[in-house]
Length: 128
Image (cartoon, rainbow, N blue to C red; front, side, top):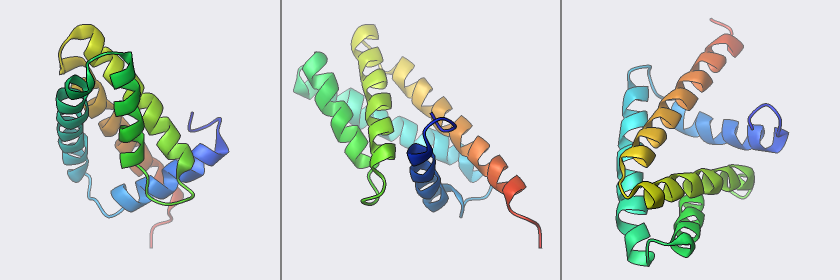
């Protein structure tokens, strides 16, 4: 997605620069763990069952998950992507009946994405 959709790439870079740029490398572990755990507990652990634990509930919670990632009027591609990811995470919670799969997927996604973004930035930014 990052390489093939320029609007998403710009949107993701803006969002990730805001979130990741100020962090040092060990902070990326927390960035993977804390949102992965807290967002899954909220969206798939609380909201999904409260909305009915069916396909409609997955769609509604996914849209709200996408909106959570909205950080400005130019960020709609990132919101769209977060909504799609939220749907996959919600669907996996509904099908498996537990939070382990979506929580691990969310944590791994955050860890890998933040690590790759930070590595790319370190190569793109000349040393002073």
